[in-house]
Image (cartoon, rainbow, N blue to C red; front, side, top):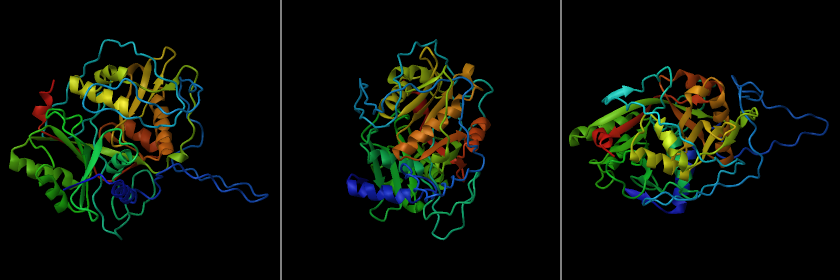
Length: 420
């Protein structure tokens, strides 16, 4: 096992993972259109299927507050061993004012199951589901085309899409705000990759003990996980992955070690070209803002897997270290929000039950996609298999569902549930 620390090696890994993404997926801001010939009007870009070319307007909303673009610099670092680092979002926005919290809404924890698909959300309010990684099964060069729902066939790359590992490496190469590291089985001809947080974390903290996995060879992946010191099998931790081997290898090793597992399945949605999304427009009652660690209690109260000190600390550090977006009412109270995690995935999207069916999440999804494009990051996330409303929204906006199911594997769930 090798931990990649050399910037040149990390850049080579980033380039290799970038080539695994669909060819239409932008990895940086799109170049300006070429100048039109004299006397010839420029040809308009074709409209992707299912995406009308008109502004997206919320039924209630407000234009974003005017202001010069500024990079958010984290202030008031949270206590703990990991010091947050600044990131650069390059978005004009108004700061989110202090929140006046209502009595917290406590949602029941998920049932303890060994293997299940993410159940459909309840009618009201639909609970947000767990995060999961976005990784794909290795495919040899020259393999058949991969058909992604919601769009035409995409030529299969030599590696299947691995946006979550790619997103973690992007963050590492851009200041590493999440204190992540990358472990490989060998270099430069690696067969398996683990992107994870560096340093020691409490054994019962399943929120920050995250491992995003990608492999070219399942045997190399198994050998990497069995390497002494690679993982703490007596701790509560997650491994994310779309590849079948991510779950089966964990099952095999866990069975030999007597470790309990929980597996939850999700769909993975990725937008191949966010530059085609129209500029959203809001009505005067809603404005765009960002969240701060002061909102961690609100997010924890509306999260199906929150309700403890570990989850509140995790959400607070996400808000401190990574970009977030929200829509605010006239009083400055959040109505709808979405976060970004250490793997550059859209996470923790939620709309207050009283504010649903107003088009707010549609506007926020477009804003988040345009911001990820401006930062040179992929636009992707994961959706519960039973959350038909969010699936329809993403497909209407041009997101494509990657083949297969994204598997979220929790090791030692009883230890995680016993955390304070």
